[in-house]
Image (cartoon, rainbow, N blue to C red; front, side, top):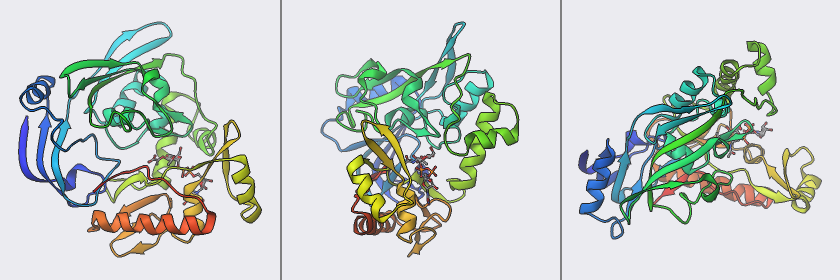
Length: 337
Ligand code: EPU
C-alpha cells in the first residue's frame, strides 16, 4: 500500500491533464483495502475509486481521497465443454484480459479488444463496441462494501446494466470497490460481425475466428480512435442519444442523411459523432483542447490542455448540437469538479 499527499493525477488518467489529489492511496492487495477501511470509514470523506482512468476528466484539483486498487491476476476457474469461467482482478488491464481469452479460444469479449481501461471499470460502465456490451459476458462481480467492510458478490442481473451504465456508476457510486469480475465465455464462439465494417475487415485478414476478429477490431479502432499512449483522450466524450421515432422523423425532415439505429420499442440511437461533425467541430482546436480529426465524438488533449479547457470545449459542442438539432448530448466521461 502507498499513501501520498498532494499527489499528481496527471499520469493516472488517459486525458493526461494535471490535477492534484489531497490524498492518493494505492492498494495492491485485498487485505490492504480491508485494513484501510477498518481504520477509517469512508462515509465522512469525499472519495473517488480510480480504475484505469480512461473515462475520467479532472476539471480541478480533487479535494478528497483517491483510492486506487491495483489488484492483479487472471485465472481460468472452470472449463466445461461449452463454456469457461475466467476470473480477472479489477486492476488488470482490460485488453490484456481480451488477449488472454482470445488466445485460449474463449469467445465473448473479442469485439471489445483494445478498449483502454481496467477490468473493474469495464463492468462499472458496461463498456461496449462493435455490437457487444460487456454485460453479456459477465457471470459475477466481486466487490468490497466500503460501509460494511465485507465481500459482496453481485449477479449481473441486479447491477442495473444499461448503455454505458450500471448501478456502480449511479445509485451505488462510491459504495463498492470492485475487486474482481468473473466472465462466462463460450468455447464455441458466437461471432458478432454485423456492425458496419467488421465483416469486411475480417474478410481482408482471413477466415472468421477469434484471432482474426480481434485483429479486425484492432484495425478498425486504430484507424478511427486516437491511442491514449500518444494523445490524451478518454474515447467517446458523449453518449449516443436515444430518441423516439417521432423525434427521429422530425429530425429526418431537416437532416435526411442522419444515421440512426433501431433499439427496439420505437427507440432509435443517433450518432452523436455525426451531429458534432455536422456542427463543424471535427478536427477543431480551441485553445489547447481539440476535437479528434477522425472521430468527432472524441475530445483530445494534444499536449498541455487543462481539464477546464476540455470541459469548456465540451460545453460549446453541447450548445451547438442543441442549437442545430435540438438534442441535448449527455457526457459519457465522468467529469470531476
Ligand atoms: N460519424 C460521423 N462523424 C464522426 C464520427 C461518427 O459521421 O466524426 C458517423 C459514422 O460515420 C457512423 C456513425 O456516426 O455512421 C457511428 O460512428 P462509429 O461507428 O464510429 O461509432 P460511434 O457511435 O461514434 C460508438 C461508441 C464507441 C465504439 C463505437 C463502435 C458510444 C458513445 N461510442 O461510437 O465507444 O467504439 O461505437 O462500436 O457509444 C467509447 O465508449 O469510448 C467508444 C469509443
